[in-house]
Amino acid sequence: MSDNLYPNFGILLVDDEAPFLRSMCIALERHGGFNHLYTCEDSRDAMALIGRHSIGLVLLDLTMPHLSGESLLQRILEEFPEVCVIIISGLNQLETAVQCIRLGAHDYFVKTTEEERLIEGVRRAVRLQEMRL
Image 1 (cartoon, rainbow, N blue to C red):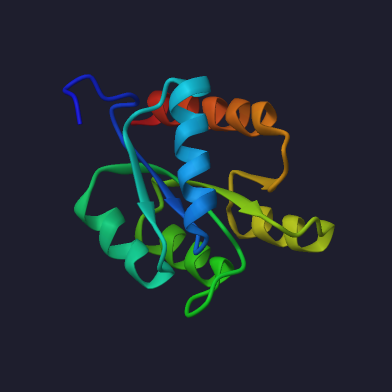
Image 2: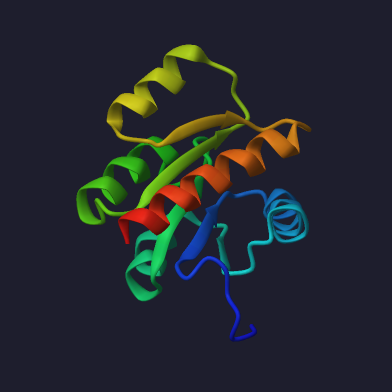
């Protein structure tokens, strides 16, 4: 990694699908200008990564083996309340989205080809975190 990391805090992507992680990282770098990225394929490892690195934003899948995204969302918000969490799910379910927002998620996106909308959501969350941190 270079010394010019943006943002100054890390963005952690948690998803059990390696191809999605790769494509999301490429999109965030190319179209969003974000290069302070970490990935995690096993949801059980996410809390340790957040504790070890200065993570300010987590992009979190809901449907994962071992530890669900909803359970992980609750743990992140309890142990790291300063971390902003955006849910990225393959499910377009209004009830689930509302529940995640009620739990404290910053935003909820459905995995789609609508990449620019998601990147804009990440930009908004990064700007908010930059003002907070």
